[in-house]
Image (cartoon, rainbow, N blue to C red; front, top):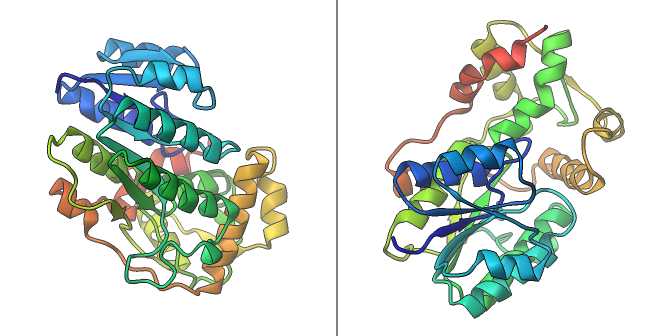
Amino acid sequence: MSHPILITGAAGGRQGSTGRLVAGLLLKQGISVRAFVHTLDARSDELRQQGAEIIEGDLLNPASVQAAMKDVKRAYFTYPVADGLLEAATIFAATARDAGLELVVNNSQFQGTPDDPAFRDLQRAPSFRNLQHRLVDRIFDWAQVGAVHLQTPPYYENVRALVSQSVAEQNAAFLPWGDDTTVIPLAGADDVSRVAATLLADSAAPSQNVYPLISETPTVREIVESLERAIGQKIRYVAITDEQWADAVRERLNPHALDHLSHLWQHFRKGMQHYRATDTIRAVTGRDPQTLEEFFLANAKSIANKN
């Protein structure tokens, strides 16, 4: 592929870091990658050593987005759980249209399957952030840049971040998920990234423009049991209130992320939507998705570390 593939979020963030994973997967295939990063640091240095072209910029700055998109035909768009998603997506979509991009893989949020009444229903968005993603999907569609949307639920990495400290310190998971029969749809960031990289690397156009990605639909009890087996110790699940959870994480989350997750937990507790695992990951990549227990096993030391 003669044109570089533009990857936003390439330096990676605190949890899923799909941009970094996608960049790494493409580089391993010998594909030219233009890594769009917000700050030049050790992470961008590592990407450069792997062969990526590094572009420092801001997705909220039209000039830097335009510069990053020069000679690009394909791109991966992702944005952190923070203010600015709608503005960044609009700038990116408009620039992509002007630049004549043929494919934008958009890291979105799960909205239901096409046969689900809640699919793309703006009034049924469980949080303001989810509503923004639904609008962003439409913005990319209207831009006519060959957009495909990876609609994902919370990542396994989110669960790890939520429970690691309390599991290590108290052998307990304090979460506002209601009783232990609440269903939490999940997927692994590795699998989401493999789907994105596969679509970007394939010279053919994707066969669809929405890819719903759910690897598992465990109950809270099943999540805790998987964690227990992975780390080899008993874990208590303690249901707490939204207010208790917000007070506990307020210093670690920005207000936008806190609002999104608080409303998402309320949505899951209501059990208004019946989630089911999708076969998208296997269909696109040819590999079975990672299970939650496999993820816990791979991260057991960091989760149970009491030092």
